[in-house]
Image (cartoon, rainbow, N blue to C red; front, top):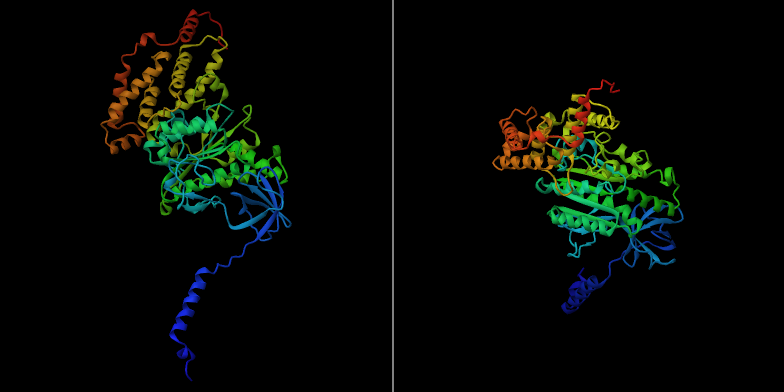
Amino acid sequence: MSNDSEHIPPWLHQACTSFARTREDVAPAMEVQERGRISTVGTGIAKVKGLPGVGFEEMLDFGHDVKGIAFNVDPDEVGVVLLGSNERLQTGASVRRSGKVMEVPVGDALLGRVINPLGEPLDGGAGLQGLSQRPIERPAPPIMDRAPVTTPLQTGIKAIDALIPIGRGQRELILGDRQTGKSAIGVDTIINQKHHNVRCIYCAIGQRAAAVARVIAALEEHGAMKYTTVVVTEGSDPPGMAYIAPYAATTIAEEFMHQGEDVLIVYDDLTHHARAYRELSLLLRRPPGREAFPGDIFYLHSRLLERSTHLKPERGGGSLTALPIVETEAQNLSAYIPTNLISITDGQIYLSPRLFEKGHLPAIDIGTSVSRVGGKAQYPAYHAIVGSLKLDYAQFEELENFARFGTRLDKSTRASITHGQRIRACLLQSQYSPVPTLEQIATLQALDQGMFDSIPLEQMDAAQETVRRAMRDITHDLAPEDMDKVLQDREHTSPHLQQIKEKVEQALAHFDVNTAGTEAEKGEAEKSEEGTGENPA
């Protein structure tokens, strides 16, 4: 039987083949889309009908460059959190499913940039096309993929590095009333990572634009923006943007962590995040609980902060350290959101408004603050110095309160107060002036050995600067391996630390010990020497 194709003229066969190829090129690809309609639209939320297959937290496209996240998936309608303005949305308008969850761009190109939680640049720079996309909601690393927290993350703040050490992979809560310096600690910690090879993410949640601009200006001034990404939502943004902001920032940080790098993320602050979630929940008719927050607010923050960890070497060995900030009202640490976060994190740094009003900055309440990782995430060289520092300072605060009643004090009590005053003076530190680790150790070593006790309080700043200058002269000639030996010397027996001690003693020798003590100290001494025989109690 002959083949029919043999009787087809060549020109006809060529024409048919060309026509078929043309049809393949111009024929549109078939795509099935599920669309619904807006039934209700309000501030920050919308309700949609006609999307029976939508999933929880799936992205929906409303058109007009407005997207939303499916939040309440009910049988008849879907409650959606809007990620843009609702001004151009109307009842009955079409809504399209995307088939994917919310994603954010990640990668080295984000360093030095200011973006919103959608990954859109806010700094006027070039667009962020071509970057990898990652979901903002990801499961935390399993326990078996984690390693112990043993490497310190130096903040450059003496009171924290010495008494409340933070490790790489730790979650340390910063809390206090309004305007007590919470953000300043986070920003100073970012600035101090300049020479520590740590990537940084600053997440501003619901902050005023002027406040965020000041932070960015400070980071640029101190050269910190080149290793920092700033994720911003302003107070005027929809609550949905504030809700997704910390998750988007964490995804950006996780990408660096999974590449084996150390990352620091500052959430400023989770109080605004909780309030945004409460607003969305009330608008979507979710049942309120304690203080009108829905019951899953604990899960909201726990699944966020559990993503911060230190990975095993087999998983790359990277770490993600979290510094969440939360605001208290009238020093109420037992409020709902602060207690939730205290139970989730590995310690807290409490800033006291009483200390702030007195000018004791940073206003860290040493007695209330704690690090549950503690000395395991601290250089051994600190251990011999700060062992009694915290106890001496606590005793000083008690004696200081006791001495305010005009009680006559014996010589040992006056000496304790004098030493405590020098401890407080050493822990004071201005903003944007982080202290390098070895300079901290030299200052604290001099403090622990009482070298500052004979120096007047008004000369303490000059004395500390003298010690730091002497330390810089020594470290300038130290090789990296010798510097590491100094940091790992728990017993302070290395010749380098002995050299530091001698250099510090020489530097402090020119201060006039005969002028030691403030007028208050001299007054206490004179009262004690009167010897009236009264019972101090």
